[in-house]
Every structure is written in structure tokens, then in C-alpha cells.
Amino acid sequence: MTKVFSLRSALVGSCLALAASSVAAQELRGWNIHVEDYPVSIAMESFAAEVAERTGGELTAKTFHNGVLGSQPDAIEQLRLGVLDFGEFSLGPFGTSVPEANVVSLPFIFKSIPQMYELMDGDVGEAISAGMRARGVVPLGWYDAGARSFYNSVRPINTPADVEGLKIRVMSNDLFVRMVESMDGNATPMAFAEVYQSIQTGVVDGAENNPPSYESTSHYEVAQYYSLTEHLIIPECLCMSKKSFDKLTPEQQTIVMEAGHNSAVLQRELWQAREAASMEIVQAGGTTVNTIADKGPFQAAMAPVYDGFLEANPDLTDLVNMIRNAE
Ligand code: BDP
Image (cartoon, protein in one colour):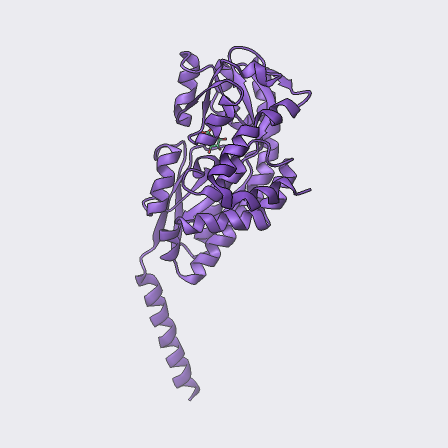
């Protein structure tokens, strides 16, 4: 009897093994705009390593760094269509397709980075996640992108009036155009990859970004005034195409979700260190950094941006207030 049983279980076992090996190993294709040693990129590699290890190589994830798979707005569309399986995106350009995501692109909406973490890991993150899922994207983890500040080749910015007349590159999203225009600057939406040359040739005077991006792109070589307005704290997401996600087995979905979460924990740690290192690099490279004594006037200048947004998206008023009224 025992023999029969063990024979049977051996047979079942080998049939299962056969079934598993006949399921072709699947490779997910991932988009990333950043250079390979960037915190985002390292975290994406750790996501891939965890997925491969925990699925025994049945599911692997290959990330194409340096934006070689195209611009961010295009990549977001491809993700929604399932042409790309996963990627790491700023919620900034996501706002044009997911209104809920736009809420975090409102200037000065978060009071601090720790507050952003807390809210994104709670109800606010849930609401944005639901909006993204409804439009074909599954967030796996919220990544940190610090705070964005203005840099330009003309003058330091201390007050909103200093922005007047400056040609500033912004990410592709009308909210950022309005943000610059509300200080009488000229906003130019443009792909990230084009910014260096555009500043160098004077097509624009500057742009705005966090210290690691300002440094890793070498924008600091051509725009040496970095003014710490910290006007945007926009979280980023490691996310997967819903089309690709739905094709995974429930076990694989769990692994992908957990690996995404774990990669975000790592990314947030790496971010802190890189921010400090980037500030040192840009200053050693000749950048003049100035802090803003009083951010009040910048915040006040953003009133029309909020008014316009809430008028166009009245149903998002609660979500906006949830963040604004948070401690
Ligand atoms: C960086 C973001 C990246 C954006 C870029 C930009 O990480 O996703 O594409 O800014 O300004 O901080 O386009």
C-alpha cells in the first residue's frame, strides 16, 4: 500500500513538475527614465531579483534604464495598453490620464516628505491607487522623489517675482504650466531627455527638479542657480500594467505586490543618501544654492492653480482637503 501511495504521489509530483516546466518562463519588460546608479533604478533591480527568486525563475523582470524605451508620457500610454509590463513613474505626468493622481501635483500640497509618506501609505494612497487601477495601472509601491525646486541660468529665485519672464521647462501636465504662469514665468512642457540641450542653447532658462535629478542629468552644469523653493513633493510609483498583472497567477500577483512594496522600502532609504550626495556634487560643480526665507508668497501665488483645478475636478475636492487638512 505504502508503495502504491508513494508511487502515486511521485507520479503526481512529476506531472506537476512537468506542468510547471511547460509553462514558459515569462519576462516582464520595464521602463525607467533614470541612469543605472539612481535610487529608482537600484530599487527596480532589487524588485526584479526578488520576483525571479521567489518564482524560481518562472517570472523575470527586465528593466530598460536611461529612458531608452521612450518618453514618460508615451510610456504611460504603453503601460496602460499592456505594451509595457511595468515601470517607475512620477505621478506628475500620470495626472493627465488619472485625475486622482493629479492631486499630488498641486504645488505645496504636502507639508513635508514624512507627511507625504504617511498619507501615501494610507487613505490618500488608496484613493490614488483605485483611480490608477480603474485606468489600467496597478501600483506596486510608492517611491520617494523628494521635493522639486527651480534652477536656471539667469538669477537666483527668492520671491515669485524673480520667476517673472524666465523660460522654465516643466513636465507634461497643464498643472505645471499654470504653476509657472501664476508667477508670470513662461512654461515649456518638454521631455526630460531634451532639457540639458535646451538650457545649453537658451531655448529655456531653466527647469525644476529634485537634487538627484538635477545632478544625475548634469543640468547643474548649464543652470547654476538652484533655489530651494521645494514647491512640489510628487511621489512616484513602481507600477504594473493591469493587462499584464491580470495574466499572472494569484501566487505571482502576490509575489509581485510584495516585491514592489519591498523595493519601495529600499528606494526610500537609498533616496535620502543620494539627495545628500547630489547636493554636494552640484555645489562642488559650481552651483549656487539658495534657500527661501519665506515660502508664503510662493504658496499664495498658487491660489489660481488650486481654484482652476477644483473647478475642473469638483469631485476631487474631498481628496484635496484630505491632504490639505492633514496634520
Ligand atoms: C524626475 C522624475 C522623472 C521625471 C523627471 C522630469 O523622477 O520621472 O521624468 O523628474 O522632470 O524627478 O521629467
